[in-house]
Every structure is written in structure tokens, then in C-alpha cells.
Image (spheres, one colour):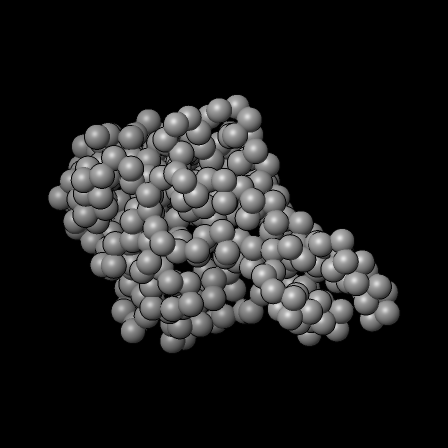
Amino acid sequence: MKISVVLCTFNGERFLEEQLTSIAQQTRVPDELVICDDRSTDSTVDIAHDICRRYELNGVIEVNKERLGVEENFSYAMGKATGDVLFFCDQDDVWVVDKVEKMIAPFQDDPQVTLVYSDGWITGPNLEQTKYTLFNKNPRKHLLDGDTRPIGTLLKQGNAPGIKASSMAFGSRVRELAGPLPDGVAHDSWLAFFGYVAGKVVAVPEQLYSYRRHEHTSGKSSTNKLISGLEHVKKVESQVAQLQEKTILAHRIFERLCEIEDTGLAGQNVPSRFAALLQDAEDAARTLGARAMIHEQSGVFSRMLQGMFCLIQGDYVAIEGFIPKLKILRHDVLQR
């Protein structure tokens, strides 16, 4: 089994050596380390070359010809990896020494496994631990449940899978079904969802890496508020914008699932939940899109008319039960 680690870098000189060293010192050293640098202006690339030479890592290091941005860079880097199992990692994290060994074990034990994700410590800039981990900071995500998580229901509710890309390892089958990362979609949400589409998902309850937060992640992650001394600027986004973003994710997933079905790409090994996820994605895109249209109306009366029209024609299909539909409709009309 060939193991690839995919790392996207940008001005990461402060923490990169520590992360790369933790990868090089794994009990199961990866067979390939793909690094795509998004035109750093510091010594990031030099550090990457130095660590790969020092530890004799099979490093594939490339500097982008033009700046791609986070999501496009991850998509590009993923396409260059040649492993049977791919790991994503962030430039500022640190891996526990047996992270790779423990995360590839489910793939070796069960050929149906397509995605594995682990817990991780949420730490400060100097790796000072908190009482929080990725799994316990938000119990409502039910990250411990792995394959039994109601991923379709989450999508219909407008929620992403909630699995960090830096916590996951996935088989090449996931990459094949996920296809190129579409515009406007976070790579971790996209790949996590298609992990469930492709096969079995396993959650490893151990903290296998340190998910480091520091001043340069300030304002970009809700986990910053868990670290003493770090500023957290709450993301201010209108309800319309939030619903539009959620609609894009659901719609892109639905389009890709239809493409998989129409082309026969799924083959005979598709999980039994494929049809249900296809329907969930269609329902989610329809309901979230309708709700966004209601929020776009300028007055309560206009929103009420639009809302009643959407309710009557069945656009609230993703919400189960008439009373829950009315509660969401009321929220959409009053925008609170």
C-alpha cells in the first residue's frame, strides 16, 4: 500500500520544520510527500527541500506558477499524489509518531474502508494543550460515530460533514469519485462527503495530531476562541449568504452524484446508501435554494408570499414533518 502525504504551503516558515520532522519520524514513513507551495515569499520552500534531504523523504516539491488560493491549491496537489491512500496535512500542525500507522490499519483490515479520520488536540501556538479536542469541542457533530453518522441528514440541514481535512486519510477511490474540487466548496467538506459515497468510513478516537491555532489563524476558525490569548473575530455573514453557500455545496454534490450515476463511475461497489444520498442532496439543494430566495426578499410581506409559495409547491422537502416546516418558514420570513 503506497502512502502519499499532500501538503499545501504558503509563508509557513515558522512551523513547517516541526511538521515535516513529525512526518519524517513516523513509525510508518510515507512513500511520497507532495508539497505544492502557493508562491511563498519567505523560506518555506527552502525548509521543505532541506527536511526532505535531511530525512531522505521522497519529496515532490513544486512552486505554483501563479497563486492559486487554498482550495484550488489543495485540488491541484491532490491530483499530483500517486498513493493508494492520501493524507492531507496543514503546514502548522504536528503529527503523533504513529499517526500514519494507526490510520492505515483500517484500510488494511477492511477493503471496504475508503475514509479514516482521527481526533486531534486543539493547541495554542506553542503546542500548549487545552481540554478540547476536535471530537469533544462540538458533541452535536457525533464525530465518534464514523460510518453511522447521518451524513445525508446533515446535508439537508445545511451542515457540512465537520471532518477536518488535516484529520483524514482517504483512498484513491474517494479522489476518483469526488473528481476535481468545484469552485465555492471547501475541500474538506467535499472529500469527507464522498468518503461516505465511496464506501465505509472509520473514526479513530485517539488524538493523533496537534491541531495548532495561532495568530495567523485568527478570525478564520471558531477554534481560536478556545485558546487563551488568541483573538477570535466572529465571521459576520448574512443569512442569505450562508444559505447560498450551503446551497452551492448541496447542488455541487447533487450534480456530481448524478454524473457518477450516469457515467457508471460508481461501478458495482457503491454502498447501499448511494441512492439515499443522491435524494438527500437533491432535496437539500432544493430546500436551501428556496430558503435563500425567501431571505433575498426585502420585506416581511414579500418574504411571507414567497415562503407560502415555496411551502405549497414542496420546496421544503428536506425538512421532515409539517410543524418543523412551519417553524423554519417562520424563521425565514421573520429572519430571526
